[in-house]
Amino acid sequence: MKYGIAIFPSKNLQDKVNSYRKRYDPHYALIAPHITLKEPFEATEEELQDQISYISSVAQNINPFSIKINKVGSFHPVNNVIYLKVNEAEELKSLHDQLYSGPLDHQQPYNFVPHLTLGQKLSDEEHSDVLERLRMIDIEHEEQIDRFQLLYQLENGYWTVYETFRLGKGV
Image (cartoon, rainbow, N blue to C red; front, side):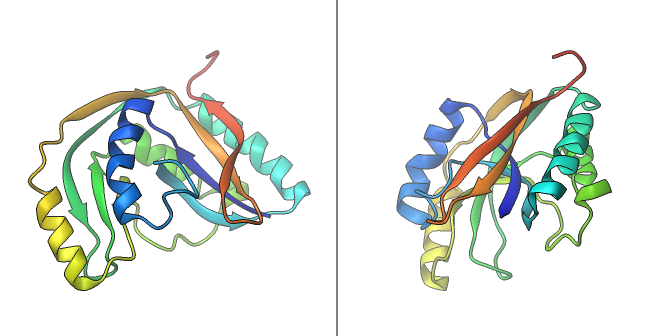
């Protein structure tokens, strides 16, 4: 089965992001707005149990942290993805790095750039037009992150939560 690990921000932020995603992101219906911590990976039931134990210990050793969003960015020319840039807190980077080690160790397909996707799979022309429009919006958002989720992908392509992990000891 295919799994992934992500942070789902507050409903308020998800609503803002979805106001753009419904127009510019063909994956809009497949998964809620999120910050990807670990790209999709395959695991058997046996492997998953070891991975969950490891993920749980990682979560306990990282305290809740704050994320800040204040600009729109793009991965162009690598691909035509437009996103809200999440300023990389040290805890966020540490969480990401630890989720690519131990029983979850495998090659990362991209460098870690924490973000919330606003649009993807756009033509070059559409990408340029939408990016310029979105760069004009005033984005100032900060919120506390105290949990993240292990997800799995259903046969129809939708992603759903398998387990939620709270950050910090005794939380």
